[in-house]
Length: 248
Image (cartoon, rainbow, N blue to C red; front, top):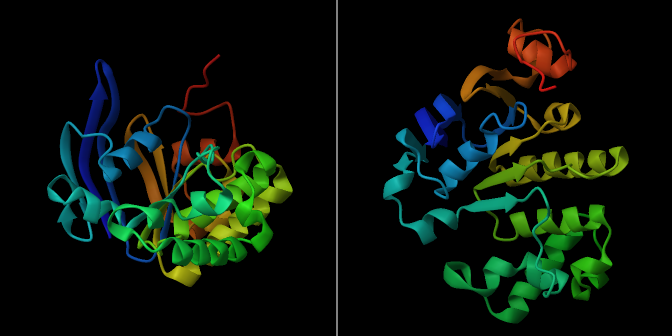
């Protein structure tokens, strides 16, 4: 469904992506792990067309993303942002139904609200929450609203950017379980970037280790712990000793 081939991207003298090769099969959950500043977010932005790579190719469902109709292309994506990115001036249901109230996917307002309420129920929130504002919700509830928005238009592809950042261990577990259930239920193709190894083990079908702009290891999550790649071993064990230099 998604294929990155020899992808390069630099910002001035900062070479972020240095020949990334990655294939995400249709209907599978790929989780990209790696330290801060290794290029995970840039890779996602390249797929979405928010950043233009210097060289290499990206195809989604066989189509070159640089040649795709932008509105049509983006209509197939859902996104859960790291910080929630909810609009403070909109009610919860208006946030969830954001893309259903405008553009290519526009629905009548009453229908959009009905869909939003149903998606809120899917992530474990009561219908009464729909008319509240994000500032009235806890961090965990806001994250659920963000998840409801990500799936509101039943996208074929969903991106999750650090889905458990800022949540306590219990709420992180709830969000991880919800994501896994929804991915399986929808049959969506997903890419997640995270530092949270609990998320990796819950969400992933396959894992890719990105370091210094290159994929160092990729494979099924079931093979991750037994892999002998030194970059992967150091990251998942949290060891200070290894090829990844700790910033002091």
